[in-house]
Length: 440
Image (spheres, rainbow, N blue to C red):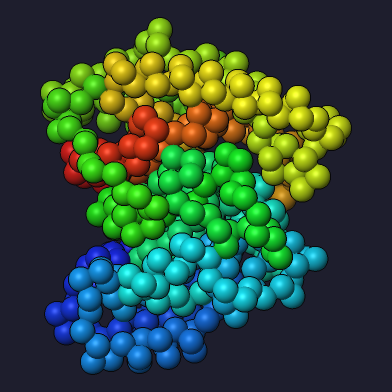
């Protein structure tokens, strides 16, 4: 069974009810606000609330005929705090930016507003978006709605918690070390990490900056079902590409549950094996090993320092030394070789199936990641090894969709569906087909 906390309608279902006249945009917004006020106390996901302006925006839609290009007409949603919305604070969880107020909307916000969405608030993050938890000195801690003693993931943890609890039906986050995929996995919702550069990230920058998209970092949608995830993706992709996904019985999958650097929780691995068995029953070709798989340990040796350097405002290497140009070129060379290796694998396979993280949601621990342990099957490991599974798709800049597939000790667990570069829509479509197969 896949743990589920709400039967609230999704984004497209809400939009359909509005189009039919069953509810008005204001009624949809008021209902979302009521859910946030009723549910968010112990969860603390929606930390920036914009209820008055949301109601005004909904009232402005009264009597307006939705356009064909407005599939989210009147749908209330939230977005990760790190995205700019004009007139609202963007802090990235950093005290030094607690008074920063954005002057314009992020590109993603602009696109979703054009599609008819109404933003009722913003959701919690860890400082500098650099943890798989979501607590900071400005807004406090967000709890996993399935178990308040556990993390909802990070850095888009508030996003996943708001979705899983039923407060809202649509969200948008960002991902560089699993920041969309891990919260989706921890909270039992859907999330997609796009190919690097597939969605304009402008307006998702550290407060007061407007530079180039962060190396390795992307923005991407979260939802409670595959159809909503696909709609959010299509509305925000810079250039949507034609769907090329095949039926499951014509698809070739590589299942990967073992990483050379970190073990996988046994219940999580078993859940992936259950999905694999269902795919095989459905006629899919599925292998459990391949010599074509890139060296994941070697890949991680380059990914981790590149990630740390990319996320450091001073451009520091893991040892604290400033990165030299030759260091960065070395990362780029290794990344290019790794991308070619993955491209070679995808000449034989359509998708790789893998864990999003080594374990289900862990208990709150306010130590920084490199100072706390990661318990896997009763044995402690360095927490930064949690980056191994997210990094498998991040370093080669590949798209990856996470869908919920089962449970471990009452907690939801998910699976990554990783595809070749620019196959974002295919990843979501195939994940949706898998979800239909297993009842997700």
